[in-house]
Length: 425
Ligand code: AMP
Ligand code: GLY
View 1: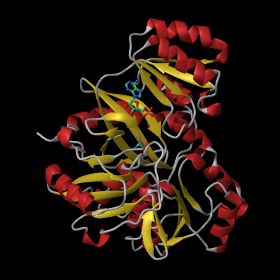
View 2: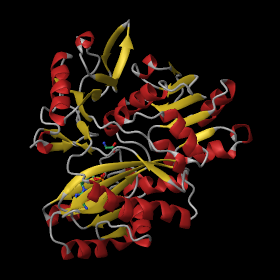
View 3: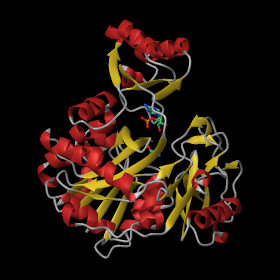
View 4: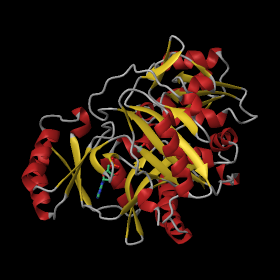
């Protein structure tokens, strides 16, 4: 099986690392990839929005399966594009078409889907410019904090949570009138604030059945103690210690099964990952968001815990045989710590040499913003790399990752020292 993986982050390095361990994988290409994916397969310099160029490459290189890493091309319909071309019809594609990707691409759609399928989520209403006055009245009827979300994709920044009503109304104006998030905020969702603990659950589905992947908890804020600005994620742990088998059973019954059944009942074909962002309130799961891909850095924590052959699992999903898959999941704990560029998630400098990588012991290192220049690795993004360690318990896994996080060096290096600490007793 010759595979083309789309994307260029730490998640894609982790996916690539796992795919090539399979005997089924006879060739791996990554478009455009990064210095880490180059260690697993061959990077090809094609932009993932250049679909014709991707299609030409797939035909020329006899690629059998395309795997989408990030959501953006899925939301724009790359899977439909591949399915619609005569010369590409035989190519397996991991990632939903635009109809399924709307679960992530439109929060308004996702909320209505959950309402139709009785999937627990925060109470909400959607508004546009035309209904601005009603939106203000709705805000006034809620108790703070106020949760306001841009409907469309906003690079993870489209959710605003604020205490003050005056500021909430201001945000509403900025989103609806000043296009704060471009067209993504033409519609906004205002929802009830849920107080609880968050966790992320992942499945691989063929649109009829599904298999569970390891669950994870990620750490989104830049500062220790979950303070400061939101980021793409500063670390993750898997498994989630508080996710008892009872809670997991409840999540399957109340969230996962109705989601898959909802897709079936609404005639939405779906082959790929579903990432359920959950808030657990008094032991009850509520869906905060759907994503149609793996998370980053959650992928770097969960993939090393999958002992089964991921290439075979993805092939099974594409062929409608996912229900036959019983993935073996390691009982070991994974702890992932992100090394970021100083200043991230705001402005940061890049191009700094990365040193001491050869001193890393007993951890996996997945590259995100890493570039090779004149035979040297240097920083090229906000999140630079993910350090993942596996151990019999969370504490040992964290210790290994933190030791290596201290060891690796580049100018301005920043990492959170408290990843997973809230889960230790
Ligand atoms: P999202 O991009 O939808 O995952 O939202 C980003 C973050 O905002 C989530 O990870 C939660 O921490 C928080 N959040 C979103 N919706 C709610 C809600 N209804 N109640 C409380 N927190 C929320
Ligand atoms: N870490 C959260 C995400 O990938 O959306």
